[in-house]
Amino acid sequence: MPEAMENCDRNPYLFIVGCPRSGTTLLKRMLDAHPQIAITRETHWITRYYRKRKGLTPEGMATSELIPKLFEYHRFPHLKVSRAELQSMLRTEPPISYADFVTGIFDLYGERKGKPLVGDKTPGYVRSIPLLHSLWPETRFVHLIRDGRDVCLSVSKWRLVNYTLGHFRSYHEDPVTTAALWWEWHVRSGQEGGMSLGPDLYHEVRYESLVAYPARECAALCGLLNVSYDAAMLRFHEGRTQTGPGLSSNRSWLPPTPGIRDWRSQMCNEDLERFEAVAGDLLKELGYERAFPHPSPQALEHAATIREAFAQDLRRRGQRSPWPQSAPR
Image (cartoon, rainbow, N blue to C red):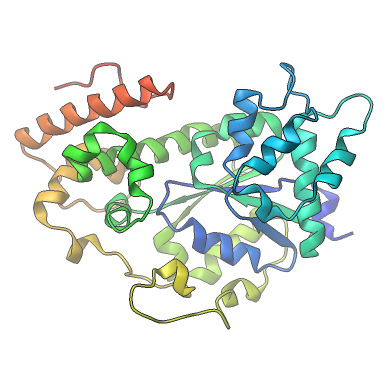
């Protein structure tokens, strides 16, 4: 048995989380290239099914009704787990908990990949760290943080934007300010949920450092995960890189590449001021330089209006807002 598994309670061994468009796919590919670590494609169903008790008893035990619900979800077949294997896990006394059932799924995925440690890359789980920690108290969380202005630039080219930010009414009025709120919501949620876990379970990685110093950052991650550093993590792209018009950096399988998005040269002053009127304090807290340390009163007033609309949408959807009920004006 590999040394890392001697101190590992169970899979999922780690979750890669962060605001979408922050580079989590790059980080996933680097970790998945490690000879001991396999990272699944985005799941989304883990927290959703548990909260809604889909196929579960009120106490959180898995039932046979869970299996067809899993296969109804379009992402689940990517795990290559059969119905027979899932049914076998349910034939236990006493009944199996949801956490143990998901652990079994991840173990099967790891067996197929020939790797003992299995993690998950679902950016949106950054808002569900406390729930995931309650299910797997020893799992690690790697929170990838990227300058929100570059996230905003990436969002503007995202084919899924209408299915994510488009759900917020303010996006159609002001996409830049809404993207700033969306970024802050994710980052603050992750920090609030993760920092109380301590450095052994929660680790933040800056996207800018990951692409500028990939070997250093990968070595630090291996230390967190109790595995030896392997240079294969930096060679994940070899034999897969493609070039062609219209290919995104993800589809191109590029190596770590600084400057793919650069707010300094790609974002106009009006958009920068609107973004920083909302999220400037968080940028400063994270150590990012600001283009507008003192936004105009008009920009701040507009930011407060959009923030309140965004927060109302969160509350309407039953999600917690990181801002007061009534934003100051």
